[in-house]
Length: 317
Length: 283
Image 1 (cartoon, rainbow over the protein chains, first blue to last red):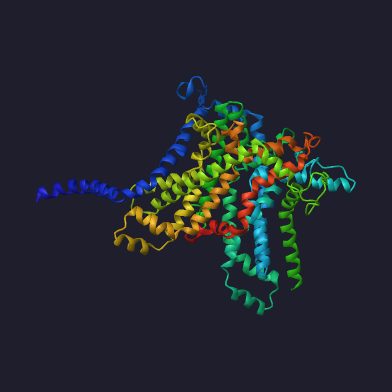
Image 2: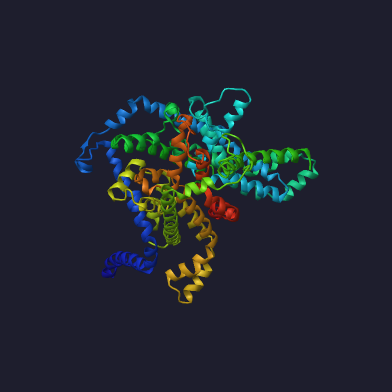
């Protein structure tokens, strides 16, 4: 009896490992399938995190990663003392506020308008057209912008000139820059952004509209009392998640649209990390800026996701 | 039709017009005959059609090279994306596999945090991939967003079919290849398009990893051609004495940089739109 009692835990422990081993063997095919992807994540997503240590070293290509001297938080102190840091912070914030105010409501409005179209072919045709810009590269969008808005080859300035006014330097004057970036994003992404709202609207029971019509509700009142409440949870989730992206600015877009004349309003963390870290070889500065942005972004996303989950909805994960 | 409808339809027509206007402008200038081309006139359609700008561009070495690079990266990159992403996503649907939890956790972590531009650049440099097309393929082999959507799509498939195939003696890999993948064709179609568009449109990685001009992709070439020679209207355009005007050449290069997308878009549009809603079946 005593013997059996002492033997039991040992057998149990053994059986845990052997069961684990058996599960691994049983699912060996899954490891084969997962292997390329797992190797990818280890090499291209995990190893670069190691490079973040360079933010705490004075990186010198001759001494290499290990040989470079540790400097603690020097690069962070330098960053926070740099005037450019506050310019980048302001630009990031301003571009995001522009995006929130002008871009965020647009897909909702557009989806409401499309949802009111009863003529099927007209609706599908419009959808096809407004989705299209989403698939173009930022290079193409920026190139088109030059042909539409620049002072020498822009068709809009041609029209302004014909109307007898001076050309407007939309692309090289600071005061237009944030608006220009926002307008580009609106042109490219507003249509695509309607998909998620249209899907939510498609879930509304048509009988509710029929009942509202019987009660004499106008189209506006139907939108206000039936459609909008149906998509309110979607709007809220997307709004909170959007707030979690306040540290992000479209990097390729900024890189393509910035020029020396608008630098003061166009420099953001990613563009600074690129010019300092890669173009000028100030590796440690570049890593520091990137890490600062990454950490702030991480905190914002986690917070907003926490709020989404707290409100009883499914977050991004 | 009520007044409400008229206003709504008119507004939507105006919005669509704003969306297509730049396309129409670029399209018609690129096909305008150099002889009748007048700078800065808006043509809805070319007054006189000509392929002069296109034949000029297509005859240049730099364009031929860029086209080859871009097609190679897009074709090879998309195939590898699909293989790696679907296999890993399928493995992640099996809840009983030891190690699945930590892996899923790390995938989600990469969705909210990345090391940033410089550490990634140093990695590619240390791997000796600078100036190699593989620098545009390996670092974007798969991504958390696609994995999560495909995983939840795969989870929405009925598991009875898999069980039935296993009883019939099918191996795990056989089940994946012969049962799961054929059922996943809507997701495969959507993600083929997403991956291909993303490779075709990549600009920044091509800019930093391929410094050798012979290896440039289309996007980098078009950027240099259109934006650098007219940066914010500072450098003078025009004044070029060649037989084909600069503007029509640049417009034609923009058209070529988006040609594959414009060509497949009308036929595959519904797959694109379905793609992003695939994962929402299960949230």
